[in-house]
Length: 565
Ligand code: SRM
Ligand code: SF4
Image 1 (cartoon, rainbow, N blue to C red):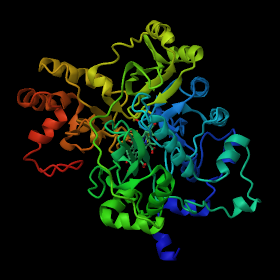
Image 2: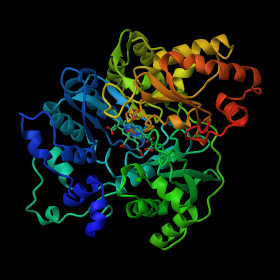
Image 3: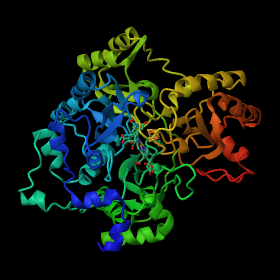
Image 4: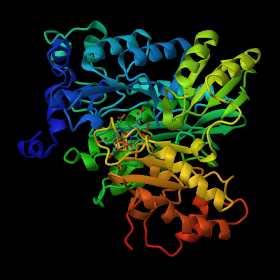
């Protein structure tokens, strides 16, 4: 690195270069009971270990109360019953007595204080799950279709997702040393002293990297919003390979036109045998061409947008020594989860459970956390977390169905009518009080807002109309609001930008409709548009498609962008 390049690099680049093991001073701080938090630099390293230092924002006015969010690496979102019970126990003992299903099929623990951090991390690893690379400038949790009945080759796709997840893991021994052995990484050992990751190099990626698999016609993983996507291709009832997509991503910043959400491009076709090599090559293009001087402009999507698809194909071919075959035809029709009881390919049953805003908890008469503990303890189903923050219990014997229904019923959950029509198709990010970046409420606010929108829809005789609604507390896009039929993006306390026009297949970005709308005005702003929709829609037409066909026809608002009107 020359001195001039170095001076332009972000601080994250400088510290990764200085400590490529990612060990920082974490082990020493962990053992120092007098400290309630880690240093600024160590908080950056902690992310690579799946840990975020946060503080309770509800309590900021009195004093900063530090706490930790821990995110699992759970490829495809699949856990055994035993592993689930460990997660439940750890959340109860060291967290805030809830488990948060994430929009990438993982679990997050919230509210863990430093004294409990080491024990919680040890517990996760003892259950043969880990949190390595759940956050940080590396490949994150790999998504795979969660529904056991999706297709005959769902298991093959899950195995491929797990292979890719393993192949793209960083190789530092710091994670094992700190969290499993409970000791500082031994820097006398030359393999640690001179460590450089064989795939990522010393400075890892310029930014996070995300990978997902999907099996058409279902796009339940929102595959096109990922840096790297694999769309399963079936020929004569067999999985022959995948169309590789690249350059999707959603994060943006308010008022910064150089940042924007982007739908990935279809690059070409790979066989299952070429999957790992191709994944590594895409990651290396990000490693070598991503912007290391500006973290807001560092995602792979900007490389694709600025250098173009043809350049990207050629760059991949250069690294692979072969060119990707032409992409095969495919078609996405819908996203979303399957709820209630269904038969699996193997004759056993699975149960899709709606989890409001992804939060497994006991609250009032709805005691989902206790119900799951009892069901998993007795019947040991497999647990599958969905990319829409819901849950599937799978591998259940048909004879156990009624007992499971009875347990859920006694905990206030009816498996036949779960949630509301909007609730089931919605997502919200955690936002306040845990997220340090939140500008407005999301998880705590969306359910009440949905009830008000549902009342409006009933008034307009649209009560049976599913509309995909997603909300985030800031423009980073964690609940993928830019793909929703109605997206709410936090702008300031009590204010949201409103987006309209995503589609059911999640292949189209929506557009900004109104900016900085006050909470109290949201329903009033939606009323005229939904009224027109009720009057002008074609038979069976969805709200997002109507917006795209009619409402946005004469507008200058750009997909995913900010209105120029
Ligand atoms: Fe996210 C940062 C939560 C999926 C884009 N995200 C954060 C942090 C860690 C805040 C922070 O950096 O301090 C949030 C923690 C909140 C909390 O208290 O728990 C957070 N993101 C989440 C989760 C839990 C939201 C959810 O409702 O489930 C999701 C965890 C997924 C997982 O298991 O790995 C989550 N985040 C996403 C997604 C959706 C996806 O990946 O499919 C996106 C948009 C897609 C993308 O990456 O482009 C997303 N999160 C971001 C960004 C913007 C990145 C960018 O390119 O600009 C940030 C901010 C950052 O990285 O600096 C962010
Ligand atoms: Fe936090 Fe913003 Fe992500 Fe919501 S979208 S979790 S507020 S970073």
